[in-house]
Length: 347
Image (cartoon, rainbow, N blue to C red; front, side):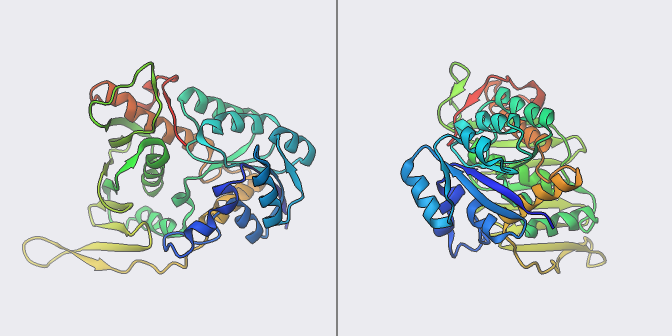
């Protein structure tokens, strides 16, 4: 079984230290940082790290036993020739670095979310990955959480009948938060195309000036998928999802820690009753390990990765369509109609 060399750009939280913050948080299965996940995987070897801050480089090297430390990530790639690069920097750098990693010929790219601050940047990342054959996943990690895999399998098997509606619950900002909610809704539904988006930014009178927002806005949205399913985000609750079908519903609880399956039981009175059914027991696994090993599986098989660049680009486009709809006073917007230069800063 082959192993693959991994280098990390950005040696802060997601790259190295976030596990210490989330110990005991039940919705997260450790390891969670990219470095810790590489150490836990039998398929990955952590070989190098890059950061502009010398202290972060020193701490990373001591923590993970890595000697190959660089200020310049392109020098790192040239010298170390990694098979996979994980870009764990701030959002404003994601697209620039993602394009450069692909152009450098790195076979596998993990790019933190959101993939870009504009659709022009997102287009550039997608095109670079296409051109250079770079296998791509991003840090929308519910897609790689096996508890959500179990829910998607039940939906695909028809356990809740024909799906009509999906809902996300939580107040969240657009690119740092709703890129997760939209991606998870899309994943649970089998990744159908998003045909139209209607949304608004908060506060409701927020103006997009000079085609730019310098703060990632809180937002809400309504999605219409091309298979007729509709989805909403409700700005309340604690990161939960519900998918409703003709024969029942599936709902996550407490950010995916618990799950409920309810199914229609006919013959109980005038109207059928919806009663609790058994959701399969799932032993949680690290979503980050799953994400990185999914890159390896896609690289070896030639099949698309689970969060491939086409899927990620489409969900990102739908996020920007929320802002586009807002400035069109709530009009329905096709993701392809988004102004490619509309810029939204996010951390």
